[in-house]
Image 1: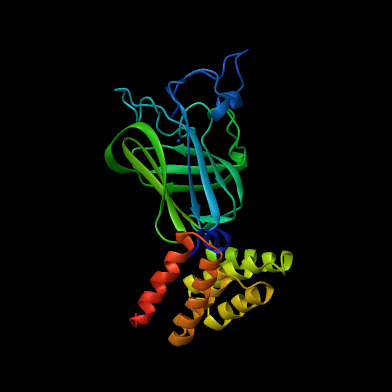
Image 2: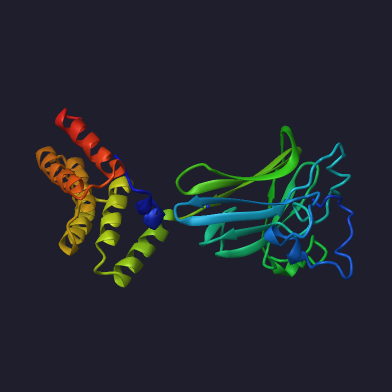
Length: 300
């Protein structure tokens, strides 16, 4: 059944220097922050990059610089073992969470953190550090660590340019993937999507009590997430009481169909479609309604 992107957004609910021994920023040169992102003055051998993923409504963002292997020996050579490493190049890699998350079964508060690693032949240490903006690991302070845990590196196909990826594994989880040379290091980030969506819903209801769209989107989210139908129907009825339109009429029709009330659902969807056509709304609005009606009339 069609679900609008707006409903999902509102309620759904995500690492080596170019040389390990490279020098710190030279005196009189641009500051570390001036090298990052759009502030870069000149082309860099390890260019800035970022990756972002939404889990529910929680946004996870990683910013880093990408060194290339360039035929060099990496682990235990360019990147020494047993030493804290910026997990990228130039500035320390950062990871940002827009909401609280769980990593390694520990809560991590919303915010921006430096992401460091300590490589070893058989096990790596991953570190989240409160001091987000720093050059390399030269000023790394373990007292600012908020989380340390161990992961095992895995063999992987060759990746010349250091790469981070954020790979969702469910509606509420995603793996942070680090890939370079022939190794992969990953860890899971968990988001309590249901609790965050519930809290956001309550806040929106309090802030916008006369907004038909808030209640309509809540009902549509409830339909998708399997919230009890009586609750979703109460929300859409509140939306209809504020303003009746093709959108909330269609949402109620889909809820009625889900509740097994097919004749009532068909009659209401016909009304929604008639209003949408009268308003000359686009096919993006009318086509899903027509599709639902065709399926329902055939008993599907």
